[in-house]
Image (cartoon, rainbow over all chains, first blue to last red; front, side):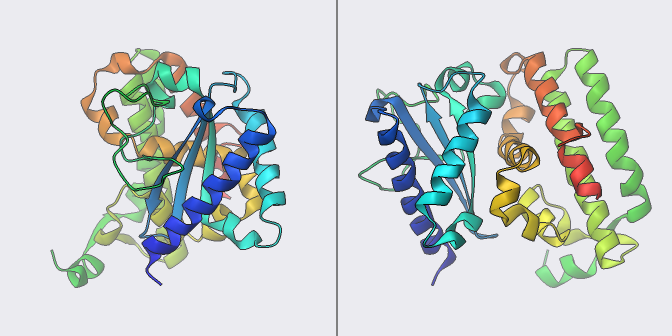
Length: 129
Length: 147
């Protein structure tokens, strides 16, 4: 199967799991954002999970909590954990830009998933774009 | 350039690369001290790239780097450097070093921003945090690549 198709499946499955995590925390859909960047050359997906509920000093602790959730979520198919990397980001840090900004090479995932650019006028994103 | 030529042609020498990555890291520290934060971060990225290329030359027993490795793709370079099984390992991803690696790869996606946007987009804290991801003796990316 084409690598990009496989990587898109990975994005969909991980995004669903991250949505499940957000629901366990009681986060509303407008509390969090999921961004992804597929590197089909090397069969890897980079994901950034942004939440306004994550404090600026809490990114690392949330990362470990989210990662443990994903390990449990994918315990029947742990191989998927090898195909993606994850960063957990505070919305307020992303809004400040700089090192925590979302690169334009990333796309935003939503529940009506279609692959499209992140920048959409008039729609709030975690990057503030 | 034809792909065959890229494989055949050789670029910088391994000995030069082994010195150059350390020079770029020192350059990054100097740039931070002068408040040039974007340039410090970009130069730190170059240090990682060159260190990976140095490691590839060692793994492949090459005196010079093949031109096909003239890329900024850190995942690709890490793959050639024999680090892919580490990077993909879920336990590594849960470690501080694994997180630092993910952060460095994320910053590498912003290389064009670092080149073309004003320095005011980055703070001294950004540059300091990034250099810590690179060189922290306990969990930094550079000590890990050197192992």
